[in-house]
Image 1 (cartoon, one colour):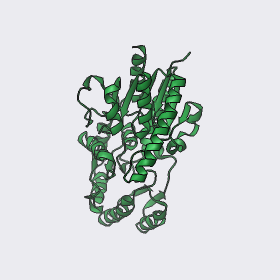
Image 2 (cartoon, helix red, strand yellow):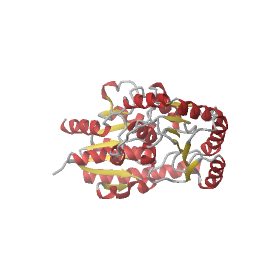
Image 3 (cartoon, one colour):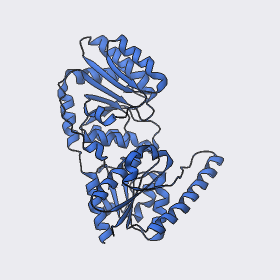
Image 4 (cartoon, helix red, strand yellow):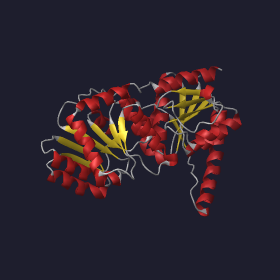
Length: 361
């Protein structure tokens, strides 16, 4: 009978995708894998439902306002009750969680039932739930060694694994040739697009083309639906080949053919860009919890794999300057790409190897 491991990720794709990637590796190694996620992430699963035993358990984060807190508390209690029944029934050998409020109930219940746990942090700042349960976890997996907010006394548990990426991404063959034209700029701002990019990037492209009329540029940009036509018109007036949409199904393939990416710095974006050795100019989401996107972007910049500017400081001119600089000196992109290569790890395999040791012990 196969040993059983639960992986937990939900709330956002940033928490779910590494759980899926780790689960895929664990299945390869003969484990029976169960996935705990929530309704918000069901749309990301696709055909993964045939690979995992999926348990949908909705929880909630605590927001401001008395009524919101009461509702959140009720949902958390329900999540704990449902999770307790699932774990007591299935009796897994190990529970591995990937952060976010969805992980709270599984970690609490696993500890109450005496089931070993391990936690993974995708960002460069240990999240609240991970911090609360760090002292009880057998191991703490980190994406980057310089992760902040780790409680004292946990050094011996830490393993710098990197952030697991899904098989469909790791399988993409990336052959970077930064000297080709057109110079392909990819703008991604999360699942709903980012208003700051819709406003500033078209203005930056206009500036760049006005200063360097002979540049051969192509832009692929994710934007809110209401901004698509406006942005497209600006690029067409600049004679820029473009593709603008509120959603792209093939983001990994698009990224693999980019010269320069302009993006937020969420954990999944960072992981995919590292996997594809793709330099990027980051504008972190300013309202991310504990400003973790700032930390993420800064780690990439410190390692020479990209650049970042805070949203309250960014201007169209800064973006235009970076476009012109990297267009005219492709060696900048080549060096950044090589630096990203140094950050690559086989994260899912590392986690699976440690999971085997935890179960054996």
